[in-house]
Image 1: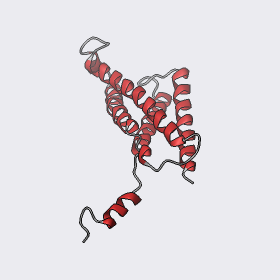
Image 2 (image 1 turned 90 degrees about the vertical axis):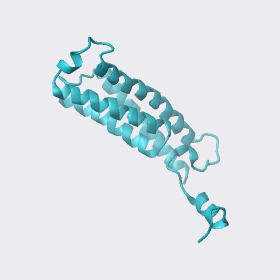
Image 3 (image 1 turned 180 degrees about the vertical axis):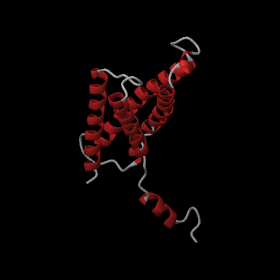
Image 4 (image 1 turned 180 degrees about the horizontal axis):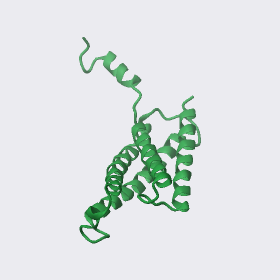
Length: 152
């Protein structure tokens, strides 16, 4: 069994492909899409931290009188609590530029869009918000695709 500093363990460590985008081998060329993807994910992370904290502000009564959250319907409460959690989890994963962060973010944004479409009484989103979220998704998927092709 090789010990920690042996050449075979160093070779195995080099072959390990990290989940984090920024730790993958950098391709040669003028524009590195993996760098663009990492920057975009960090911008999204800041936006989703604000979105998650705004859900916590609703729960804690920062923008509304204390007790108003508890007086709302159970569906509304569950929705706000869901986004208070998933938005911050997605933001952490996005900031780390990990694959799971992008997946959690896509889950969070799709949840928002589906709930806004089917339950507008619980989660109302205007056309501008829906268009903005769809644009962010399209840009994320396009940059992810370009970054994945970059390695080939």
